Amino acid sequence: MLMLEKTFPLSSKMRISVDHEKLGNFSQSHVKFYLKYSSFVFRALKKPSFQKFLHWMLEKEKIEEQVVRAVHVKVLPFRRKNGKGVAGKCDTVRGRIRIYPKTMKFCQIFTQKFGRNTLLVYAGNRARAALIHELLHLKYAENEKTVRELAQDYFYIFAQKQPAQSSKALCIYTMIFTAKSVEKKLLQASQTIQVQG
Ligand SMILES: [Zn+2]
Image 1 (tube, rainbow, N blue to C red):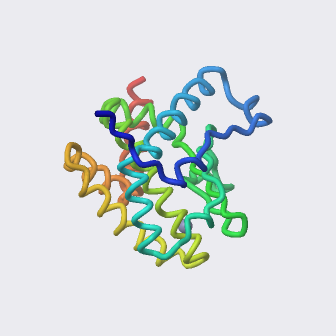
Image 2: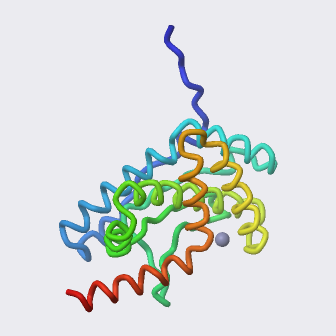
């Protein structure tokens, strides 16, 4: 018998989005890489198990699904003026959320250190953690501390419920929420690679 999977309203509000005027700043190989990255992340965010989880979380937080107008999976990365990469943004007035990728350089170093499969698990779960975080901003607005704490708790609940990948997802959980130390290690690794090269 054909089983139809329940679709969640949030899923239909998601799209891949690219700033065409910024494309010229990137080489062809970069653009190709980021297009692949965004379509992978898009699929990861649309997975029914994750959508079901978000539906449950929004209900629990009493955030109405129609408050979320759009979720844009951005193709190109975004950096603040201080050089720090941004995982996501939330326009609480418009109800619009943007999810950004890691840079190609980060992904190359990460792959050298942990392998491609771990990068894919990392990229998918980093985007999920970012979407959880930005959705919570719709309710808690500027209260960054509360959003961070709740996002961490919710992502943990999601990661724990993933039967096949639970150990890996939990490992990634540690990576995402101790990202600073990971990035530091990766930076050291990249410096080592540069010295060797
Ligand atoms: Zn935030």
